[in-house]
Image (tube, rainbow, N blue to C red; front, side):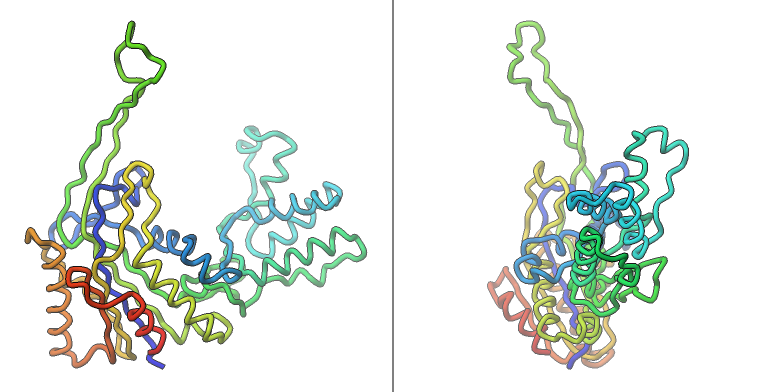
Length: 360
């Protein structure tokens, strides 16, 4: 098996604010002396793993990432007729298996209704990623507690090192309180950056009040301002196929489906930020897939100098392919096999990219 699958994608987004910083502005980064738009890897991974592509391809093999599992367990126990105090006790015990239970300060308690304080303290401090196998064990334990036939203390060992959660296998998980159950991510995802310099712009907008006749006040019902920018993004991914299979309990068929879903979603799924305002949904215009056992490397150096040509996409493709050729000349072949899609020339297909990666 060729161990590494590397993907290089060029995707153009029209005016958008797909990934915002703490001030609501599109995220940016300085590179090569110029300001670039940026979409964080966290934003991209979230969009992919919650997409219809993942759901249809990997149904039953997607985990749940939450702090509120204890609250969910409490509600399920209550729905099954378990007394409130017992439901609190067991929900807390189960949630504590996955993380440190949240402790409310006296100030926090003042702002919460008395009956809700205990419920709030069923939450864990850090997001935990629950695999389908762990979820099923939790549901089984809930039924056992609800039946009241036994005190199932011996069934509290719920964490599993071996599971079939595709999103955990790809992107990893960290359990600070139970590090032996951590999963090392099989996929590394870079932040997407524009291949050219950008300037973030302001959009001043108004909204009209439909019931305002204008007889007394002809002004707008609402004034607002948002920021946006547009650009052609370069994205790099590297997947360790051996680790992916290992993370999925040595299920190669599931690993192939997971890899195919990742490739399709990275090419077709856009982050959800401000989509209702901008409808900035795009597909990759260029994809290069490389497979091999050679040391992986990004091709972002092709855009260290910002692209300034008017035909940005064509120039960006040429830079990637030129950088690829020169790296091969210097270091020797950096991949065993390659496949590409180029929408400018209508060459290649997404299915060929997927087959290149899976059959490696």
